[in-house]
Length: 355
Image (cartoon, rainbow, N blue to C red; front, side):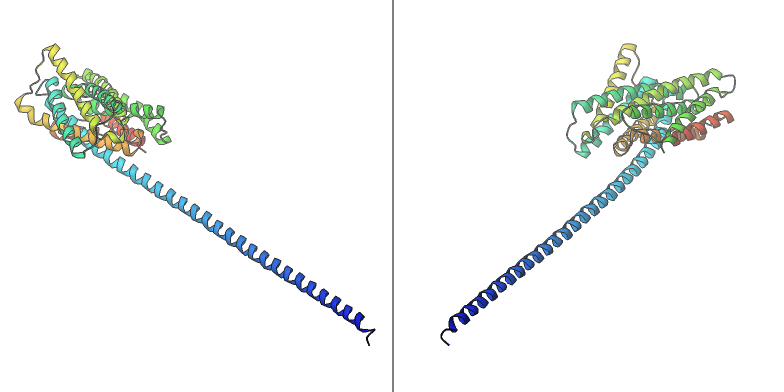
């Protein structure tokens, strides 16, 4: 018994050591498996979180894109409405100004109407409570005033001495084409329909200029077309210059525009010896033209800041509609078939320019 005990004890110890090593390996493998499982779970969780984050970011961008597109459409709609309102007021103001010029000198009509506009612009600017604009904004406002004065002088002369149904549409077409071309040069891109509208402007000008004035007054039609074209160039440059002002400038550019206009008219009256006092009989209509013209300018300025110049300028150029309508209702001015066709083409061209 004693001789066999040591070998048995040795074998027992060896078995015990083998058992303990096996258990340790099992524990190690179990720990590795558990750690690997936890790592896999963590990786899956991180992947899911990343996917959710990406989906949330993509959804956020899509929502922002939809919201931005909606805001852009609403802004364009507001711009169209404001431009249409300015067209109505421009048309009524031009008719009143032309009617006032038949009773008072052109210089006095311009001086009084622009002075009323200056008062209205100052009141509106003070009401909005904006800070004073930069020198650049004031300069653009002054430039627009000079261009607008030239356009008004040409148009009022045409409305008072020639044919309203020719001068007003010609001024509208030219006044629409000029800002479209300048807007394109500044980086805007009108649609294909806008270019078709420009193409319609050419035959419209021919028809409006070739229409017989009746009673052998063909020369009046040509003079109306020339003065209307000069007015359109002035108005187109006014639209472009005033649209270059910043949003932060408020309505102050219109104040400098009216100040420059009044200065030019006053200097012209001083050196030419013309009177700045309008006739008492036409004073009310002159005052009304000044209020309507400034209201139209305010509406157009706000429209140009809400949408593209190449769109709002041509919508605002639809003002011959109310002007010709008032001339037909009040002055009983006859429209020949050729002139009606030219008027329709002119308005169609301007409408296509706004699409």
